[in-house]
Length: 265
Length: 354
Image 1 (cartoon, one colour):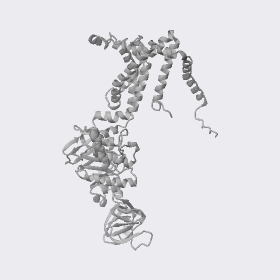
Image 2 (cartoon, rainbow over the protein chains, first blue to last red):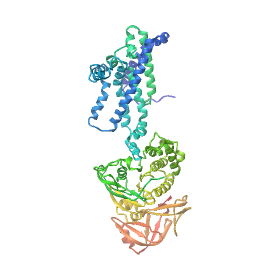
Image 3 (cartoon, helix red, strand yellow):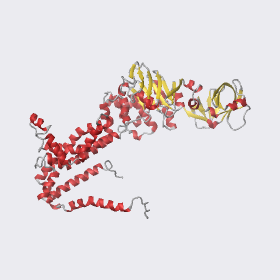
Image 4 (cartoon, rainbow over the protein chains, first blue to last red):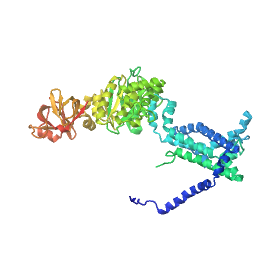
């Protein structure tokens, strides 16, 4: 069967430019995958230092996701459901880590939470806890950069919800906690899930704020992205192997998010 | 099984500036007040104010002697009012199945999951929809969803019922069953009940009292007969003055006491409501020989001028209303006591199962 020509609505030259963009996104992946030392892959990925980086990445990304959930879900609910002076300012502040260079974020964390920082100094005096250059510091750095993903996703979902359904729950005798727990959150559960996944993916890839605030200490703060950076200097095959690992994880995230964060139609 | 203590009525003056609304309402316990009015009259806004989902700008809401909203200092939140509300768009919880929707109110007040579900199932059974227990609201027809919304409101043991178009958007077959179920449960409910409708049949069949709202104001209130027989505005006259009779249908005829009407609907049988619009009633000086199936002779009881039209109340055997022009009144000599021939086409008579 002959396909009917579609009416032309997009200038042809745009198709060319779009093709270039796709190529630009694809070529680096091809470059990476083409350089994978498939034979040596098990050995490279089984290296104790690599396993350490994997363990650290798991700890910091999951820790950051949990912390983002604890801090970010209440913020998203408050931003979406109550009005207070300075709400627009707070919303802007939430977006800041998205546009701020992560290195600057890391430096800011250092000044705030470092041993001499405005919060770090009293914390050190009171508990002897030092956050920079610790695994906990790496978690905090990843939380700082990934928190916006959760807040923005969940707040947008809450804003799109019909508040009258919550009022209907109120007429049935439900208090604000019951409404939140049984009506509001279940209705936005898919968005919370995709927000958490995005947050986790961003935390997993975190580099700039981590290396600035938590340093690059093997076994303590050297996560997978930092390990890739270090390996590029003197062990290229290992860098490629780690890169492949992160690409696979990223593709997995996209598959899990399909139809939700990006449209599949 | 219903509200624990219900003694008081609901009194309110509802002023909502945004909706240009200012109405006073009195809802006595154990009675159904039908709030009748055209779309955009402010009926739903009244219900939302009473339910507490919309605060008053002016006025007050008093239930059983307790002030619920005085527009300034007092505002009792909806959760503490314990009014059973069916919203026009129902607002069922799509992420919960039907049983959990109906059990929601009980669980919100602290009843355990199993006990609340058992009570919810009992309500579903009473509303003849137990078979739908496991469905999601998105899998229900309009009539089914309305029954679930009613069950959800009733199961929460409310002190008053506020129903916004509970028969709206339901097809004819669903409507008949739903109206019967609604009539039963309204009659069994001891507290005040407010029923919003734009359908005069529903107001007439379900309401003990009718309040007519137009443009944010109450234009008339009274019993269904008051409204029907003495309409005070064009809207009420057009909508509410349609004559309604209850009778028994059989093979294309409807028996109304001693009188029998021929109707076009040959399928109807059993208890029915018959509706005849005053415009469908023709008056003649001589016996007409045309197509109308229903022709009889009567006398004129009363003549009411209404602007460019005249309403005539007809006497026995059927207390009908006829609407004619002032010119026809003059030509036919239509005055109280005058004899006329009445003709009603069978196709102009609406028949609906009761």
